[in-house]
Image (cartoon, rainbow, N blue to C red; front, side, top):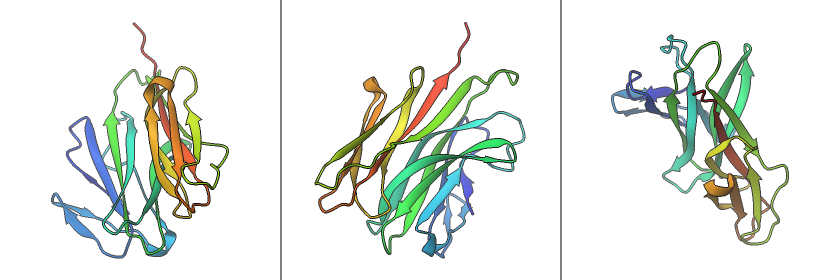
Length: 193
């Protein structure tokens, strides 16, 4: 239920998917809609028009809402037909109308040896329930932090801070929240000189 926005000949492009029952026209590209009662919207970097065999990697994932409906975002990795697919999933507060946006990049390399490895992480533990209680997640050694956010399914996110020098994301619980998780997108560039 998503369409790409932008030109596939470029190396970086934006995908969007919207929750709700309406579709809208964006930059001459139809934006397909999701289902309102799911509570989330998701999009991936996959497109049937991509037949060059070069993988696309998700660099960013964010939630957009015109009615304060966002409750965080998370990059997830699913395996479909023996192929790993990274998705941007954003969560809606009750009655929230949300739109997922993913920034994707085409990274070419030797097809026999992938030049990039990607991990999407979520903190194992939930934050406390006091105002601004933190929880963090770190990228593994050898990986670089590219993006991160706060995740909640109860409207508890009070934002997240990225600390690239530590490869760490710290998410915060809001006042009267029930706890949140921190999410991180980590990439390892396998460059051989």
